[in-house]
Length: 204
Image (cartoon, rainbow, N blue to C red; front, side):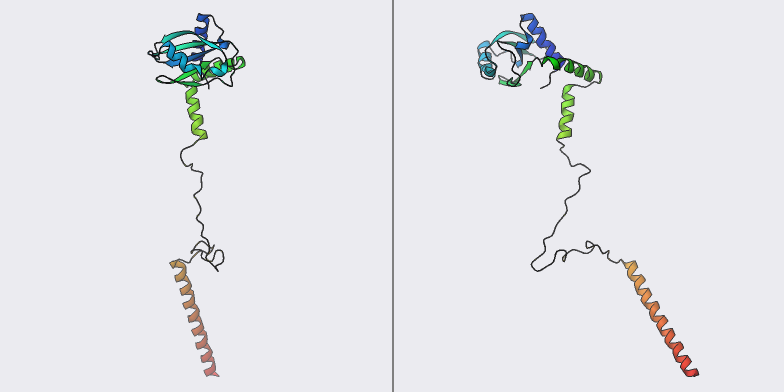
């Protein structure tokens, strides 16, 4: 999961205020005001168990989100493979924020600065990628499905092909009229030649 610079800065600020190592800490966001400490610890106990021993280092109320944030201090280094991205808690899903690997921090900072200069966010990029990878509509380059007809018993393949699909173009009315005219002209020529033949016989 990608975090914005704002989330990482908030985590670092909280860890600095509580004097804990940000690379051995998590921040949980979205905790409702009416969730007491006992409820909170019970909810996070199972999802964070794969990370080893931990304790709640402190909490703060965030005015912008109208909810609380909690800093969790871990005894061991972050195991990125088992960190939950979200926790199903009271009032909905709670977001889990953690420090990226040290080599990724510079890249994320540059990415967010670039997106800010373009008036975009990481969420915008993710949405575009989802649309590109999972299109919902039929693209213009897709070909329509071709209908196939299975020949009946004793018939050869293509014997029942409808007119116009066997490669021969049917004659239209103009072509038919043209052929009829040619036949008539041929008959007239034949009659004229016969008359000439009879006339020559009479002269003889």
